[in-house]
Structure formats: C-alpha cells, structure tokens
Image (cartoon, rainbow, N blue to C red; front, side):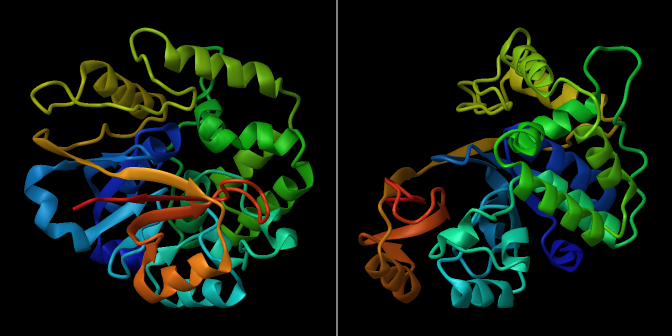
Length: 313
C-alpha cells in the first residue's frame, strides 16, 4: 500500500467518518494530498485543476474499475477466486478481502468478508510497515465520548463486533492484530471493543452529535450528499465537521484548495448473473453501461446484490 501511495498521493476520500479519518491519517503520516471527495453513490467533488491528473489519484473506500487507478477499500469486489487473484495481481487494488481471498460467488466466502472500515485496515497497514502512529489521540478525559468512539463508528465496526457477526469480527480483529505486527493502535481498538462499554449507547451518542448543529451531517456515520455552496466552495458546516474530527484525533486539519467541480454519475443496483460478469471482464460494462465503480453489496441469490455507478459522458 505504501509503495502505491508514493506514486499516487492525490486522494479522493469519502465524506463519512471512514473516509475522513483515513484521509487525515494518510495526509499526516504519508504526506498525501486531498484533491476531492465522493459520497459512495453518485457524486465526485474534484478540485478543478486536478481533473487532468486522474490517473495519479488514489480512491479511499471506493473501488474504481480503471486498471490505472489506485484504490484502497474494503468491499467485496471479486466475483470468484480467480477474479480475486487477477485484481490482486494489478498491485494497485488494495483490499483486505483480496488479501484473504473473500469473493461473491461462494456464500461461505462472502459471509466471511472484512467487516470493518477502510481506516482500520489502513492503520494496520501503516503499523505493519513500522510507522509510529502514537500521535493519534484515542482517549480524552474532557468529554463523555472518546476519539476512539469515532474510529469505531466508522463502518459500524463496534456494533459489528458485539452483535450478530461476532465470530467473523473476532476472526478479522485477530487478523488485523497479526497483520499490523501487534500494532499499538490496532491493539487499543481490540482492547476497547471487548471492554465493558455500552456499544449501542456510544453509537447513539456519536450519531446524535454528527447529525445535529453545527455539523448537520446527512447520515449517522458522518456522510454528506452535498458539500458545496452555489460558488462551488465547501459548505461551512462540512468544513466544521472536517476540522472537528481532525482536532478530536489530534491530527492536522485537511489542507486543500476550494475551487471544486462536480461529477455526477448514475447509481444502479441489479441482480448479478454470470453473464454480467462476462460482460464486465470483457468490456468493463454491465447492461451496456461503462462501469466506473462497483461492489457486491449482498451475498449471491439476494435481490440487488450488485451496486455500480456509471457516467453518461
């Protein structure tokens, strides 16, 4: 991952906690630059002068089909084992499900997919490579919420760990622990998850804070559907949210220019079939549409298992 980011330090991050936390960490410890945002659905907000450099982008928490573009995410993106090997061989599609061979076509494989946020994987990857992340603040005596609670709200990692997917979560925490070479931050996550805390109350407190004034997030995990004003500058409440998260975890605020442009795609969900996979492999299309991004969001046999986004132009 670090080698890929040395070549592609311009990041597109999600607006939710997972994306923002990931962006802050990669900016702080690897010198990456935030050049845009996405909402994991239909919109990309990109600094206009960067649009010609798209092959140098790294998309965080979003898989992009283009073979030249680097992605770090945690979704199920491979149809079967062979497809998993193929994507992994590209070297710039970085995903714990590829590392451990989790894919769509086998339900027994799908239900063992990675259950946490991209940020937890990124932290483990950095710790594996010997980076000292102790600057990250996880606990505070000043508030009822600790910074670690925001980390563990990312992709609902805490609830996933203590509710119905407990065994899979435990397996993946153990994997992250080993993958990170017993990383200090990763171990603190694990110790906290399995300590005597009220997970559901903490989840509620984080969501209440993010959805209310002054941040007015549109999703309980910090996500936004719109981040720009009429002059294509970041909305004040979105900037407050970004700065708040940075302060909470003791990292530098996101540094970026503000002349954004908007790219709006079309999201679609379908029941994925083998014929769709053949088309995707041959032409990077599904139903005749050029696929920009996709993920297998449900196990095989369930309705609308395949989510993808395409652009008309």
